[in-house]
Image (tube, rainbow, N blue to C red; front, side, top):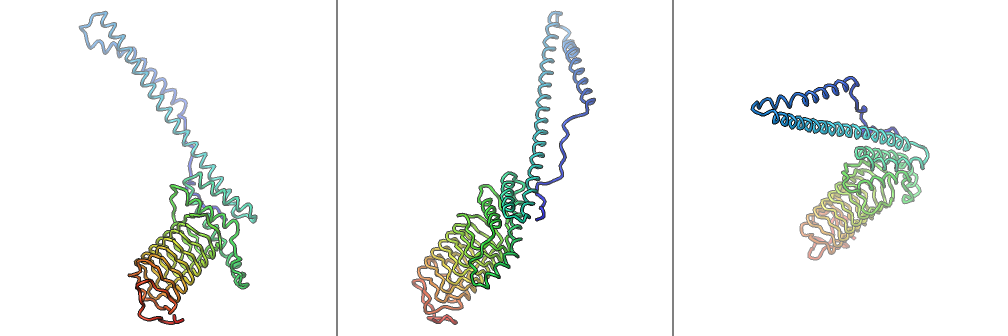
Length: 374
C-alpha cells in the first residue's frame, strides 16, 4: 500500500535560536554604557532641577535618585531576563514539537509499509501501529482512519472471489473476513468510541466483512457501507446513526438495541435481520428485503417502508407513529400489538394475506390483497 500523506506532515525548519555574536556583543556594550551613564549623570541632572536645596540635602537627594535608577535598571534587566527565558522556552517547545512530529512521520510511514506485507502478522502489526499513531497524534487521526478504511476496501475484490466460490457450494455462512481486515475494522470502531473524538464519515463502500462480532456499542455514525457484505454480523447496541447502508447484504444481522436514527437501508438485503428494541426513527427501508425480520418493540417513528418486503416479519410492540407502508408486502406480517399505528395507512400496502396479523382496532378493507392470499 502506497503511504498516504499525513495531514500534519508539512515542510518545517528548525527555529533559529541565536543572534550573531557581534550583534550580541554590541547590544551588551550599548546596554551597559546606557546603564552606567544613567547611574552617573541622571541623578545629578534630576537634582539640579531643584536649585534651592542645601549641599547636604543635594548629596542625599543625588544618592536617593541614584539608588532608584539602580533599582529601576535591575528591574529592567530582570524583565529582559524573563523575556529571553520565555523566548527560549518557546523555541525549545517548538523544537520538541518538530522532533515529535518527525517521530510520528517515521512511525506512520513504517506502519503503512507494513500493511503492504505478504505476511499476516506484519499486516496486523501495521494496523495496531497506526492505531497508536492515531492515539498519540491528534493531527493524524483522520488520515489514519482513511488509510484503514482504504485497507478494508482493498480486500473487497479478493473477498468477492471467495464469496462467489462459497456461493456455488451453498455454504455462504462459511465466509469470514481475514484477521487483518477484522482488526482494522475493530480499530475504527474503537477509535470512534473514545470520548471527545470527532468522527467524519468512514467510507467502507463495498467492504466484505462477513459475520464479524463487533464490540458492544460499536460506534460508526455516518459510516458509508453501501453495497457492503456483512451477513450474520453481530452489531448489538451499535451506533450507526445517519449511516449509508443502501444495497448492503446483511441477512441475519444482529442489530438489537442499536441506534439507527436516519439510517439508509434502500434496497438492502435484510431477511432474518433482528432489529428488536432498536431505534429506527426516520430510517429508510425503500425496496428493502425484510422477510422474516424482527422488529419487536423497536422504534419506527417516521420510518419509510415503501416497497419493502415484510413477508412474515414480526413488528410486535413496535412504535409505528408516522411510518409509511405504501406498496409494501405485508403477507403474513405480524403487526399485532404495534403502537401508534393509526397514521400508518396499511391500506396503501401492495399485499397482505389472511394470515397477516393486524393491530387491535384495525380492520382491513379485504381479508387479502394482491397476491398475498394464503
